[in-house]
Length: 233
Image (cartoon, rainbow, N blue to C red):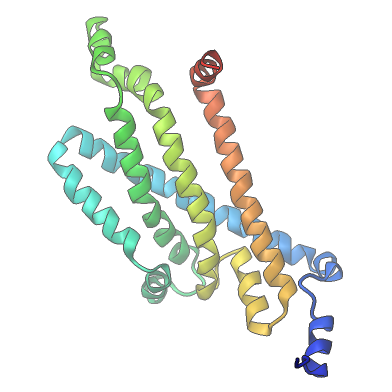
């Protein structure tokens, strides 16, 4: 049975998975990475929601557009993120935040559009007829009836898109953005595991926290869903 070379054992002993003293000394760097990660995620989600809402409205108003919209967003979703970041880097510059935000927002479109459309299509026709019978205008019916009933579907799409975006933000480190991804890439490049461990762990924690917050927002926006679940128990 062969044993590991002594230099290898020494290297492993001096390069543990995490050094807490590094975390304390470099906390400002870690905090800046967390803030940047959050900003990139929020900007991408906001842009994705605005564009998705417009595309979904078009698809619901003109049903024939649903196929080309879905096909286009599906094509964007299949593009490798690294390739898309690299293609936009010469246009906006490696250090531009928009070089990261635009691809990140584009990757949310398929998830958000399909869930928004599914939510509005799930509204029962009898409910729409009742709203029309009460004399509601189409716009008022959308905001007062259709949208509240579509919220659970929309929030599901937002949850999936947000968690996916948190993960994709780390890849933006290849163009000088990326928040916690820069810690991960730095650790990999130098074979220094602490930044990589911190970046990866905080990325996972960030995704879980954002997902939990969206769930809480959903319970606040649609309290009747909570009451319905409680009644069925």
